[in-house]
Image 1: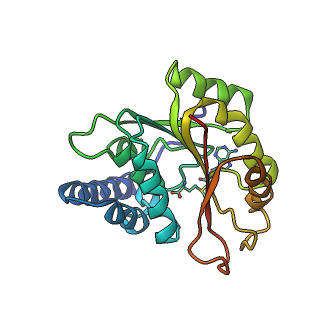
Image 2: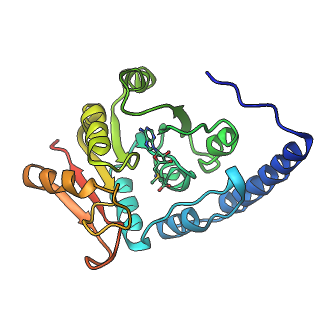
Length: 233
Ligand SMILES: C[S@@+](CC[C@H](N)C(=O)[O-])C[C@H]1O[C@@H](n2cnc3c(N)ncnc32)[C@H](O)[C@@H]1O
């Protein structure tokens, strides 16, 4: 594992105060009696700064509809490809009862304590962070070892958005999802702000052969759109 370079005293102090502020916000979040709507709103506007900023960029109606669909599953285990700033992780860790395994290619060691503390007080959910390239054979093996003989109730694919990348994630991780579980994709709309957002091409194919549902705020919008596959029981 590559080591992080040593931090200057100034940087250490900055990190200390940023982390303290993020935990203050987390205590406030944990102190409230929140609905799913409230939790998705927190995930979009949690606050914090630097590596301790928690955020997800979503259409509120889309992520809230997804969170409701996931909650209806009463999931024990959630697997997420693409942690980024921990926004959707905040939502999943309030819904899963056993564990959320979240994966990203970027190092998360600085935020690890914060992310592992996201489940609400009293929850038995554990957050596990896996860092690496989700497309690699070795990484898939780590996910398999981490899961052991447990199956995933909900798989959220929100990592590499290229056609090749999202297809690799779907092909790699769908086998871990239990019958009756859900697989979701973010950014399924064709009209996207970035050329590399190519999830639409895969989604178009999946719609032909799977039991799917779309959560789309406005079909004329640019970007976003969530698609889910419900696996047969
Ligand atoms: C759109 S963001 C995820 C957003 C997050 N799910 C949320 O809404 O809060 C995509 C993330 O996928 C990660 N990513 C991209 N390619 C990856 C890969 N090959 N393996 C693992 N993570 C990857 C990026 O580093 C980035 O943090």
